[in-house]
Length: 186
Image (cartoon, rainbow, N blue to C red; front, top):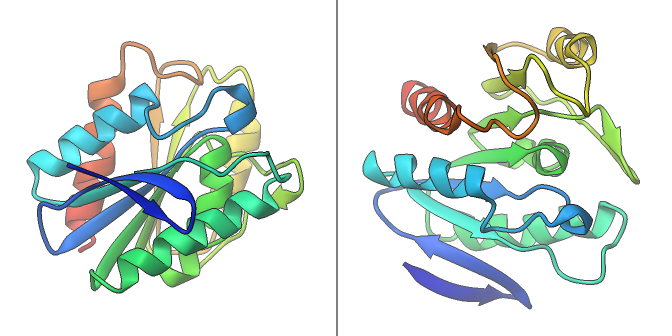
């Protein structure tokens, strides 16, 4: 594990294989960071399957989502110099950030995606994508989540998990769903 700094962005970069997954954290004003428990569980599962992982923190102060997308682009640029296959994974706010750079990646995973937040909106792409939706999400309704999925272009897959926005008690299912999708599509 290496703690690195990419243009003032703090990141954790674990190299295990040729493929890499970049994990975009939830909202920084709600305590989101690269150490989010969901991202840590996903990272562990990916590493067990020989997929390298980068997790990063958004720079401070908060920049309405636009600056956070720029942070993700800088991290992606770093990974593009080192890997030919990049999966982008975002949780909650991070899913909206991830969707804004997914055109530069090979596959995308959106966990509890939001249609929009602050100054950014969810963007579609033509790459294979997985939507993971919590059926009891208290921040984005099931109908809203399903609409986002239905409006997305193919190829796409959907996993519904019977839990709330935080996935407590379902971390293993979440991590395995992400990893299996990336392995199937790489």
